Length: 405
Image 1: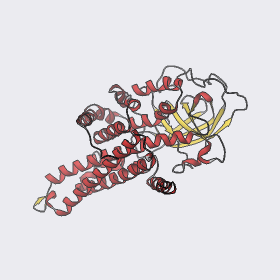
Image 2: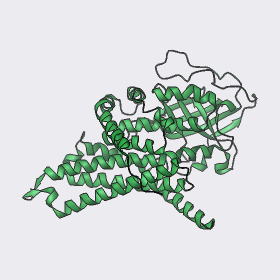
Image 3: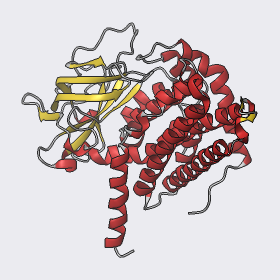
Image 4: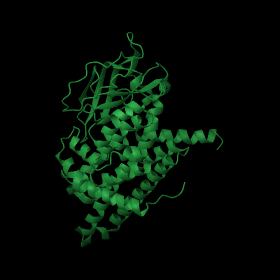
């Protein structure tokens, strides 16, 4: 894998994104209500053309967007990322009708997407899903559950649809939990068990509009500015027209999506780490202490050097993984896991050191580092906790050995 470096066009674009995030997106983010979808922010991301790039660009561009936005406005970064995570399965695995119905609305920021994989008893162990997709005793294959009706956006004037157009082939029963953008999304990529006791081989992915009868949700009080909620499925009807990909192959849809988004979670982390590092450089260069500046103390200078070293190492691994994805390399799962693991653990380290070097001022509500200190913890858990990433890395390494490579 060749070394990664930004070309002048990419460097200029990143600078432009940082400026847009600071000048146009951050003011909208500050007006948002914690725990709720900031639809004005999502719409502005669409107006700027950033959401459309989720479907027209590769992994490297996705990482550039997430790192640049995270540097200046983590809320904007997260809003963009969640649109991509929820809608990528539709883009990559959906039918022409599904893509035509939903992707333009996601791109313009008028429809909010969500990725519904985790459950109360199946977080890191995603193959242990228990949400059931049971054959509907009344129905054949049906045609187009929801294919001719719009999922009702919050505040829409159309009345909710009472039932899908045709008889449902399956009924979804069970729960999802820790779902970002729930319960306020307009549609969900839902992973359900269609074959009992089959592990990852018996899961099917469905596109489920939020107005589907039997689907309810509630918000969870989390350490997060964006909504995270639980979903309850009470015999929610779906048909073959709602399926994403092939039956019993939904785990492939999930892992294909995560292999793209895990490196970009790393880019989000790198953006936060860089923001913390830059704040620390400015503070230690100006702060008077012990007859000089903080930067003149060797203990401080060495800590700052270590912060910079780890941030740059994480950045290089993130973009190496993204480049591997764009080039369709065989070792994408291992690289994606390494990138997410190193970058998120690095960001936690860098932000923590930055807080320490700033002292009590960094813990004051509204300080950049107080904000980053709250934001930086979750990426080590979602889309596969750090322990899961280590398991993936080891599995990929041993698979290479067994293959005799």
